[in-house]
Length: 206
Image 1 (cartoon, rainbow, N blue to C red):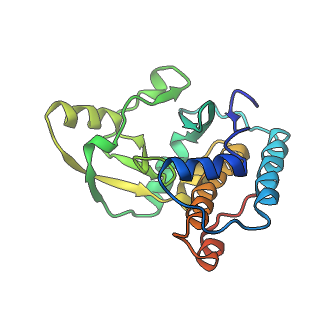
Image 2 (tube, helix red, strand yellow):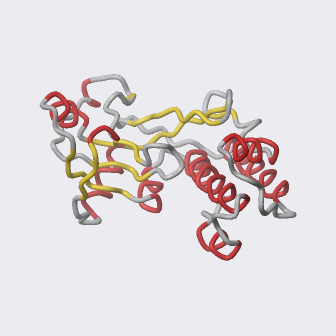
């Protein structure tokens, strides 16, 4: 699955420590089982390669997330599942800066069925990346608002435990959980997160 992810450097203790030092942080804690945790994550990704993929011809949203120098992974959601979850959960709108929303996402399949106009804007909360969110729907509306010079807008937010249900396979759910946990582990290494808080907030990867 080298076309879906490449995380050779990212999933290493050396990279985690280098990342923190580059950001001016000191290493305060290094869990004795950190190497084992990262090895487990690698194993789980390998296991996901053998998981059956359900062919879904409905529109999919895909992003490529760069991590490290040359590493990356791709993330993909089913647009119809994400819309269903948004309606099912009766989500209340939240106001966020419009410049956090990137309307230039890839939609698959590349056909008119993917170009559904939806005035509702909803996003996936995505804490591990700098802008903290990914635009899932309403990109035409985002483009209109940006053209008008609007600075803020109301959006519907699917939080991780919800939008993970709309991801297009086990490998994507594991990739998100691993990136999320990687950020938490780095916070623990530099002393920002206690071991108790770390264990409470880690996503299960299986």
